[in-house]
Length: 458
Image (cartoon, rainbow, N blue to C red; front, side, top):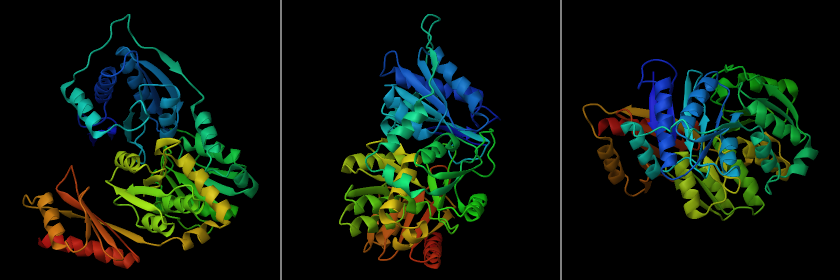
């Protein structure tokens, strides 16, 4: 069983021992730490809370809401929702922060408190240090009976989100409506059924929904990977659909499947959208993290734009986007970030922009993929035995490959002419994770194996 604290929130498995899992006591204590962090910079604050479709959501939501109320904080509950919806709603209502109850792509026995600041964004490392201090020291106090917070419910959040996407200037709303796409969508029994489906219907798509009942149980492993999407792939062929869409339970990641039933590849979500945006001169800069595909850089340079890489993690991508004033970016896990909508991964704007690209180029999904730079990835890990220091290993590799292009903002990335390797130490166990990309799967696998051997011999 697992319990993980980080600046993005508190994540763990439900049940078990206090401090080792996400138990009711852990939920209350860490919600109180967040509440104290909010109270340190806001007077009479309100917090927006919402949840994905897993069955533990109502229990966790009740604990979170009543803890905040007990601290004198007003709670606005938007119920079943998506992470990007809640991020946008925080700023819409002028709240001091937000908590989305979702363990993203993790299985049913997980849940999490994903915490946001007043900008509807995940908090920075500096902000997180103070929050962690409140959590570790249990440095929080509660309000007296006359100063309790209030509880209200709001039901307009998802409609607001959908309308903002439909009105976005980059979305070819009328062109999509005229295209009459047939789209199969796997909602994985969560809030994609309340968000992606009505968005597509508003775009005049013929929508075939799979796993649309929010039953509290996921019909399959919720991570949108090919092995988990066989029902979706089969339905695309049966329905003669133009494409398939899969989202994770909190709808901040999106994966596409072609009309032929082939995965488009999560890494290529942002690559394709950038291709559409740059072909229309709507952006001139892109950002992704160091472990994302080189294809985004290739597309950016094709249009004489600029590409920037950040450390791994959504908050790091956002910080880099702000630093270089990029209007578009994201992560290779299907996370699309459009800052003038909000600084967070958003499957709804991702779907709308992808469909916009299809109408702009007049491509089928498979045709679009064939026209993009094609790469393949591999992942490995190496255990460090005998007290070997991961930093020393990475420093040695940097010296060994000093003649190559290297980047050390997050571990060590080495860029070769036609491939790259990215190595990062784990913060929780004595291992180094290895990510590679090359022009064939065999080459990516061989590069990963090569660096496993190099590290083991060092």
